[in-house]
Every structure is written in C-alpha cells, then in structure tokens.
Length: 488
Image 1 (tube, helix red, strand yellow):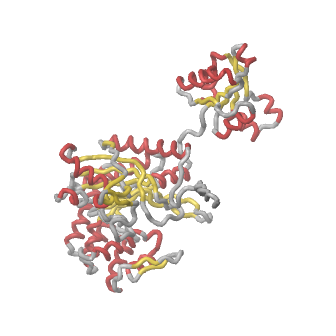
Image 2 (cartoon, helix red, strand yellow):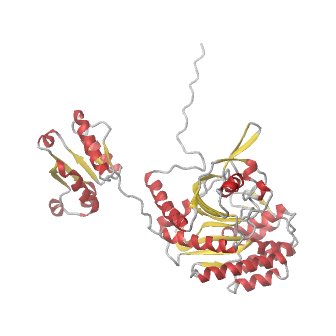
Image 3 (cartoon, rainbow, N blue to C red):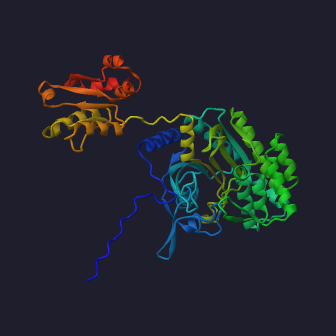
C-alpha cells in the first residue's frame, strides 16, 4: 500500500517585496499621520476612504516603467472584467469624483491615507506595498490651488518635526518640459518616447547625467544586468533634452532661464507664466526660497501630470549602509492632472494633488530622532494565585478606567520569573504583584521596571541599595502610585 504523501508545511516568511509592521512602527505612523491630517483639515480638506480595488480600466496606464495597462499592478480577471489593487490614491479619486460629482462640492478638496500596491521588482528600500498620504483639489484651474498645495505641504512637513532648513519644496511645470520636447522634435503622438524621456529625467538624482543620456538613446544596463530600453533619440534630440536637464543644475534665475529655453513655444511659455504666478503667491504668504523654489529638474514620473509638478526633498545628511554621507532625498510629490477625470466624463475637469511617501517620511523622522510614538508597553498585572484572577482583572480595569494601558498576564503563572521576562519583552514600565499575603493585608507590590533597568545599567551596589525599584502600597493607592511612576 502506497504511503500517503504528507502536505508540506507552508513557509513562515513574508512574501518578497512585502513586510510586517509591529506595535511601535504602527504607533509612530499613526502619530505622524494624525499631525498631517490636522494640517490638511485646517486648510479645509475632507477625509475620503475609497476602495482598495479598482478596475484596470479605471486605474489607467500611468505607472512609470510599464508599457501595458495591467503591468505593474496586482490584477486578476473576474466576470470578464480585470480588477486590480490600486497603485496610488489619485487614480481612484478620479473615479470617485466622476461617479459622485453631482453630490460633491466644486471644488472638491479631499485627503486620503492608506496602503497602495505595485507589482514591480523589489529592492533595498523598495517595497510592493507601501503607505501614501494624499491631498487633492478637484474642479479648479486656478494656479492659486497649486500654490496652496505647496504651502500646505511645507506646513505638514514642519508639523511632523522636520525643521525649516532641512527641507525644500521644488516646483516645475510639465508644460515647460512639453515645450522643450516639441522643440526637440517629439510631438504628442510620440507617447512611448515621451514617457521614457520623462522617466529618465525623473531618475536624474539616482542615475546621474550619464545614465539619463543613455536612456535617451538606445538604453541602459543596470548593476544587476537588467537592460532598460531607451527612447531611441538621435544625438541632436538628446542634446536638446540634456540642455534642459543641465538647466536644472544652474544657479541663475530659474524663470528667466526657462523662458530662454522654451523660446516662442506657446506651451512652454504658458508653463513659465504659471510658475511665475505660483512663486509670487507663495512669496506673498511668506513662503520664500527657504521653503519653496522653482526647479526645472523636477519632472515626476507618473504619466498623468499636465501642468505644475512639485516635490518635497529633505536636505539634511544621513549615512548610507557603507557609512558614506548623503542627502535623505524626496519624501513627497505631486502635480496637476487636468485630464484624469476627463477619461470618465468626457469633459475636462481640472485637478491637482500631492502625495507623501509615509514610510520614507517616517524613516526621516527616525533619522532625526523625532518619532514621538509611545515607547512603553502596558502595565502588567502579574498572577500569583490562579483562583484570584477576578481580583487581578479588577486591578487592570481600574488602571484602564484611569487612562493607563494595562493587561493581566495570561500565560502560565507557575514561574514568576517568566512573568517578569514577559513584562520586559513588552517594554512594560510597571509590574503589579499581589500574593495571598498582600491580599490579606489589602496591599500590593509595585515594581518600577524602568528604574530597575536604569539601576542595572548604571548604578553601583551602594546606589542600588538607596533606590526603591519595588515598594509596597495600599491597594486603594494603585492608580495614584502607578501614575506617579509613569509621570516620572
């Protein structure tokens, strides 16, 4: 008789390109998002939660580095329709506005926060699931809305703890680049070539001038050996584009420089005028070049931008994995996408927005030592007598009623040392102890675990004897004594 083949056990590992978030990470993210939401709310924006799943048709073909509508997303077929996990929070907004526009105010101002998914090659710091935090205005063509988004982004970055001088909001206009592309002989019909050019310029900080030039031509092979096909431009066309890229590194007046680049091209000239108006509006409100600047090198890789584009860059230095100093880089970006809603309605609906990379901004706050999430776990009520579980739960209930995190140890209480080890792993500040003797006298023991750790690390034997890391108190003083320790 043949042996029954055993079903192999599943591997306990996170899928490639994904990760798990634990308590402190989740708390830090929530604290940061709460601060950003407060800024957005002050500017009059309303919260929106849209579906994580959209049709591939609704999402559209706008992702960087992809050539097919369902490439770059996690998609599946259902009832003869293709569905996909959203790759950002902007494309779903276009569908939401088109679907509910008769019930929404115009302009409609919304913010949204949540995970997005991209089916792309993972790498160091590059994940297939990540959080975004967006703010968008739909229904106005005024560039005052673009200026407002940039100013609001600056306020949000400062609100979470990034100091002025450690960041800059860079602003450009896709109309200016479109004008340069027309001068270079790339008409609107050359969608593929234009897309490659946009993505190449957007990677300037990572690839350098030589890498961008390669992508304008035949293509480029990266360090892993993967080859990215280029735009196939001839040398003269590439020279025009590289002239624009070089202009972004210049120290001259950006408005005047861009005017000279586009010449009498109508599209480019319109873009320059819009940039000039944004700069004037921001300056009038006190957002000068110490916070918001015009920068021709900003492109943004997504294919739906039609006008002003913006990027928030953190300018302070950090050390890379090899200990070399480098700037932290971009943490947010966005722009105007006047044609995105038109795909659904057939009518032009002006819109604009900005998206913050939540994980990158969290990493920046960690690098600056600005994370303010709760660092301690709950107070742990230990269990000395199994038959007195109700008494221990009453203690925890009293602490919670006073706004203090608390839990009863629910493991095997036989070994008291394991209960204290559990409290240490939970980063608990306090342990509560009451055996039958203490209960008979209506008292309990409070163990200050934070002080205990400090004594173990720094104090001498003599100093240790003078410290009271564990003391007895009346049962009725439980909440007051624990609060004293936590406030210390």
